[in-house]
Image 1 (cartoon, rainbow, N blue to C red):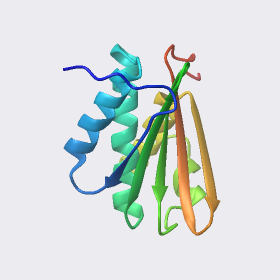
Image 2 (image 1 turned 45 degrees about the vertical axis):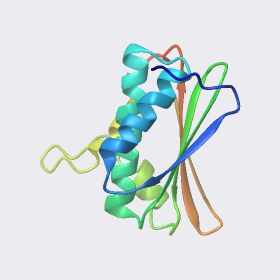
Image 3 (image 1 turned 180 degrees about the horizontal axis):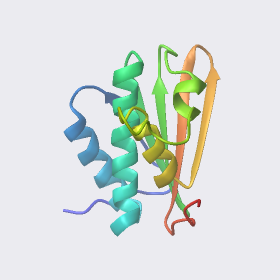
Image 4 (image 1 turned 30 degrees about the vertical axis):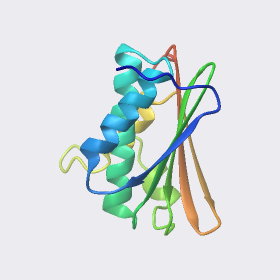
Length: 138
């Protein structure tokens, strides 16, 4: 059964080791918001990588999704503020020998917009996905 996501509707999921359920929820939300094909896969992969980054570097948190007429936004909140801007926006390419940083690199490549907010003791990573993808950077 397909769901329809109404504009302004917002969902929150705790970030836990159960990434399969998180990906299923994000996929259902994205589908209901009108994302399809590659755009939907971009959303799911980036959400999974963001949650994995919080689990690996942070202390747990929440993934929040909302939609508007143009697409879907994800906000990944590290409630402990353990993630730093350096972790999230550091070296633009993953390390070729260790593959460290590949998740962050993927998030930046798959998202149309990426921003980081460090306030109130928490780190908020915002990822934006338009229904029609932006051109990938060179």
